[in-house]
Every structure is written in structure tokens, then in C-alpha cells.
Length: 208
Image (tube, rainbow, N blue to C red; front, side, top):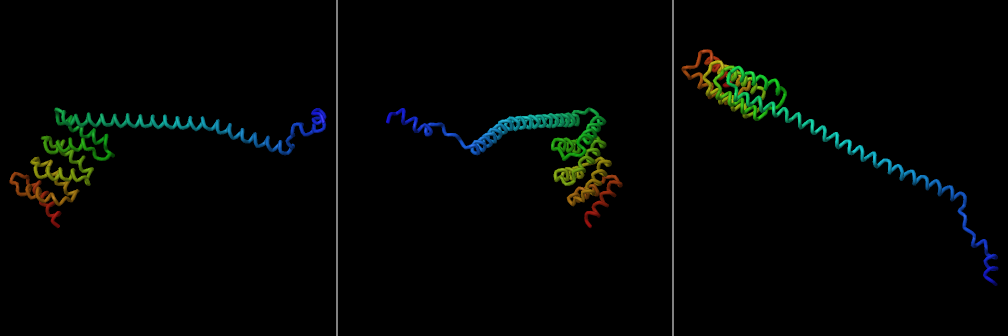
């Protein structure tokens, strides 16, 4: 049999295979679904990227504002503390103390401010400045350093007005370690009767 006759006889075998109609429809549905999922992923990826970048920028801006505000407050504090040391008059120093208290009224104790207050408490000659500092320190009754400095000042202070202020302060603290400086005041012949009376009353209370 010639090749030509063989091909004609089996021509149906050589025809292109046709996919069944049901299978063709199912294939088309699956293809569209895959293409839709891929396109969704492509669209979703840039959106997520943009959101991440936006969140990072917002965070950096927030940190920047916080740092700027924090730095400004530090500068204000340093200027006020410097004013305590550099003030040439008692009134300007007292004004600086009140401004510090207004600015940092609801905040935790600041080490730099406390050191400046302690210096005034022990070295300043102005009774009004010392009294203002004592009021400021009493805002931190649980601070061990504050308690120590007040007790030390009580034992060394000679100004009657400040002595009375210190006696009242340790009375509020109910500090047992104040007994020794109280006895010192009572035994000091230069102590005013009013000061001695308050010291004796506090000593009696602490001994109960």
C-alpha cells in the first residue's frame, strides 16, 4: 500500500484532537481564576509597601517632634538652674525657684534641679530662698537624698525662720533621725525660745 493511500485511509487519526466542551469550559474558569489571583497579589503588594513607608515616615516625624520638645525642656531647665547660681539678687533667685516649680510642678524629681536646691539650702544666706526650696523639696518625701539633706540642714541652720521651716518639714516626714539636730537646737543658747519650743514639741512627738 502506498503512503498516500495509507494516510487517506487513516486520516481521522491524523486530525487534531479536540478537547471535550465541558473540559474546555472548566479549563477556562480555572485559568481566569488564577489570572485574577495573580493580579490581586500584584495590586496588593504596592499598597502594603506604601502603607509601610507611610507608617515609617509618621513614626520618624513623631520621634522628631518628641525629641525637639524634650530638648527644649532640657534647655529651659538648664537656663533656670543657671539662673539660681548666677542671680545677683535674692528676688531674682526666688523668682527662678518659683518658675522652676511652675514648669516642673507635676514631674518627677530632676537630679540637676535637686543639686541646685541643696546648694541653696546649705549655702544661701537668704531665708526666703531657703524656705521656697524647702517647700519644693517636700514634694518628694520618699526621696532618701532629700530627707538626708533636710536633716543635715536642720542641724546646721542658724536663721530662726528657716529653722522653724525645717522643724515643720521633718515633722511632716516623721523622720526619727531628726532627734539629734533637734536636741542640738534645744541645747543651743542662741536659739530663740519659739524655735526651742517647736523643737522640743517635735522631739517629744518622735519619742512617743
